[in-house]
Image (tube, rainbow, N blue to C red; front, side, top):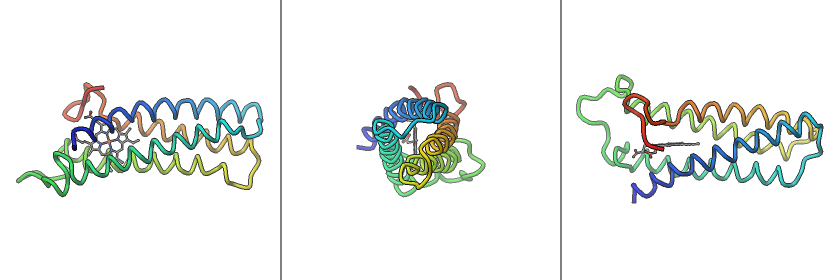
Length: 152
Ligand code: HEM
């Protein structure tokens, strides 16, 4: 079960990256062209947020009950969390950074409901999505990263 969830979690990274990239491009165009908010962009942002929330939920399950989850296996004897690169990454850095990125995506999508002009909505969404993308890119365990690296 946990290996299926891990695969889904891993594949969802591509869904998020593609949707987030499209959201950034569209919000930039909307901002620069001073567009009225288009329904299709609001939908794109919504799906970006849903994919991030789903990944977060699965990540939380993996973190708690996965093959080296906090509740399933706990820390091995003698390991000090913040001194161990592997556990520090998977228990602290990755979850916290991804949570922050998901919050940015959620706030970015939330601008749709704000009482502000549409170009301003596009501008705010652009910056929030861009920040989220940078955080996600920096904290994915890409192949080749020492100790924590995983496959694509
Ligand atoms: C945008 C959000 C996220 C993305 C793109 C993402 C991406 C990834 C990727 C690519 C892996 C490696 C998968 C593999 O080994 O094939 C991974 C592993 C993992 N992620 Fe995330 N993640 C996200 C959010 C989270 C969150 C919020 C948590 C915890 C609350 C989390 C917990 C974990 C854990 C514990 C693992 C290792 C699981 C294992 O190897 O058994 N992730 N994540």
